[in-house]
Image (cartoon, rainbow, N blue to C red; front, top):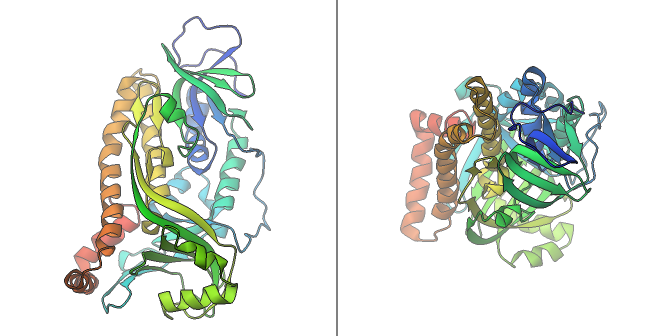
Length: 418
């Protein structure tokens, strides 16, 4: 636990008895919230920043990553860009994550029924991997192990029952009965808590009228680190390399059409998957538990206010096939910490308008570009029109033949070009 002395970023005003002051309160201890807590570690140690993490799900910040840990066949995983791995290296956690990270050496983009294809290769960029696929549970375990080493206030399980703005930031009433006054409150709860709405922050939501069916599948031959993105009339599909001969499947379906495939036997499901995807990855021989998630493009109309920042899926929920959501969120984490650090250098508190305006200016272009790219890709390949289909095929062939254009797309996929 951090010292109870007045934190540097909170105005020294009279507070009610029993109210605990913190410089930064992170609502949500998932991947984004935990990453932010870890990213603030230097400021916690060097500047005495007092940080609280509030997480609704029962979990332990003291869980240490086990050397013999093995992901289950059904464990969900995330594709992280090379730039994200570099950020984790900066935060001092990549060496612990790397043993369970499957490198992506090539990204193969194609459209079913068309000859055009584009291949993005790691060796062309002079790197070992364009990115990595890591089980979410392992990423979380490593991050929470690092959090346990920090002198922060851990509230778990707990939820924010009430949030209100005050002169020094926001006051948070927790389900545990404790009350926090935070100079900066960061919403990293995935947008599920209703706290955004309680503060009058609206979001623009565009349903794709699609769901993502996610499952782990085993293939008959080594995948060689290849990640596939394939566009079909039903919607896009992605296959991501996992350890051994396993891959994570993200298969987009029209809303409600997925129920039939959920009801299929494993063999029946694998047969339909084979027909939809083809044999470029080999034969599909096993499937794990199938999960379904509705898909929408959601963007918050406000991502900062004095004393408040909205991050991760609470700020922007993207289509998963493009694989940009968590990578965008982690860049936001790093930008926020940089803005706080620079603000402190200039005498500004973490939740000050100056600090958050600097953060917002840096984030706007990145978020706008990623949202346009991801949404545009889905919509472009979602139009079933013969002339446009031929144009898309020609475009994929041309992109594969053009080194400079392919290099630009590859750098964006790697998260090193915004």
